[in-house]
Image (cartoon, rainbow, N blue to C red; front, side):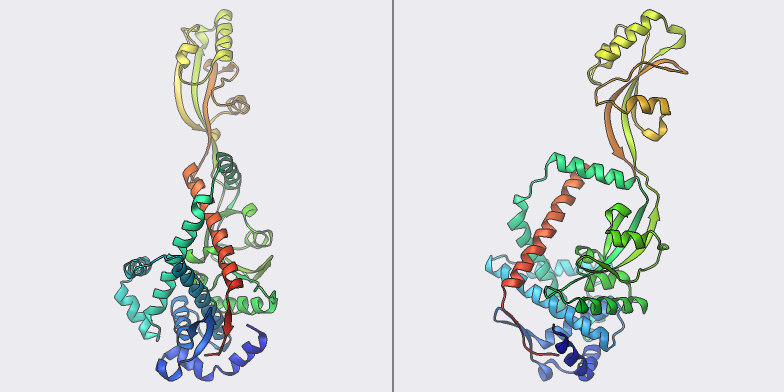
Length: 417
């Protein structure tokens, strides 16, 4: 919205400010058109209803400056939802009332409420449950559209999964930060002052005690908004450099000042910090020739068997020429549980290979590496990694599609509140 329009809006907020807070003015008395999206109107009543919903669910204390930003957010959301629902209608993607009801019930249950309690709370602020019904109907339709259009086109290779696991293991061995984020992106016009006004209004609301997750859910442009801004456990290497520099200095439980990043502004909250807990894991079999049984001939036989071994399927057969040898299945052992001598012997091995003969306190030993993996608290498996990659790509494609719809649409801003 142009700066001049914002100024006019501030000047015109005396009556709308009261209406947004109390909802005391009947809709028909103030009905008008706020915008037209491909010939479909968005009414001023719908904008006010969404504003009340944002204020009631985010905990933001309203003032004239905040209301300007909340109106911007409400109108932007309604325009995007209208485009999503128009596209769903074009592709004949239906969303039933039962699906919307179920989504509402799931949402309110996560907050420990019933639908009736939630509806009463909304009505006490002057908001209508119809606004969240539209929001969820658009979300459900959009998820169907994006999945139907792109899901079968996304292919995730084994190499991508392995690379992702390696990067994750590397970062997970470093200090990790549980971060929540709010992102305000620069508008298509590139007017940085608009984004700056939005982020400062959001920061002001947080300073006044508005809950970070609720504000993120309603006001953030990041994909994490749906999760209340929760970006999960991340290492400094996984954060934007500008954010990492700040997060590393933050005490747990604090919220940052607005941070300028490429493409916009961010505010981050540091929920927790932990040391890296991921270690390399070895699945091993052990062959031991105890000291009392060692002879030059048996040492040579042990060395030949170690050189000839091919995998863990028949270790006993591979070492049959050393009948005095004791075969032990060690299972999976963390690298940090092994003495340095054994870790060094295993470091260059491929799965199925045996170490050289080691002289240990037990006698002569050979270790056969059956498998090597990365493990530790929170480490996902290959299937989880694949789903993460797919969801990341779907999210990126969804944002691009919505941007294209917005650029191709005819959107006319008609009036104010």
